[in-house]
Image (tube, rainbow, N blue to C red; front, side, top):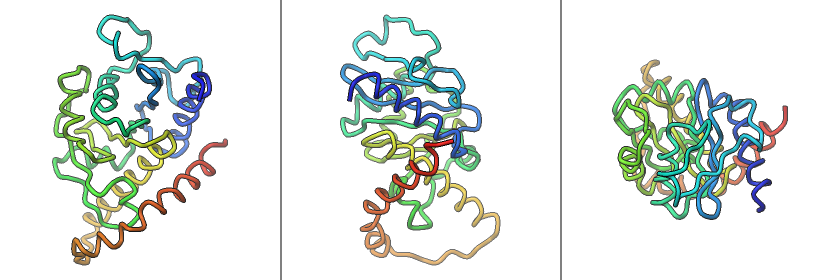
Length: 223
């Protein structure tokens, strides 16, 4: 994929997150490329265009000055450095993930489609912005081999092999948060599912993710 095409896809994905209600204020989208990654600027994501997408180069990150670069760019860098399987990251500020982020608990898996966001979703318990490589490395280590993470009082992020996969996982991370919060507030008595039950259920997650990605693209790629 040539650079301009990838930059256009980053910008398009950013607008899709807005249409999906996953960015209520702040967020960013990035995609790995040779020597670094493309990332959206601090401009409103709803107005994202390829020309505003920034190339962040790993080897020059401490020297080069970038205009309109998100403060949390180091978080993206740290994850890409640690996870060679990750080619895209979507950081959102959805309503329910932001509510869950004020607590300290992991986000429980209560319904099958919630596994699209990953079997385990940890909570990175630091309310400060991830604006340096020290804290960014801690986030990457907390994420580990998972695909999504709650970011203290600072939203959430999901990773993927490509932009649409990361965006779709972020969507179902928000749904998973919404279900967890509503079931608690409603006092619903949860059924007891064994680890074996969940293992069997998650045999379908890969196929469900493919279908969910197609749905997400067709639903939010057009105005």
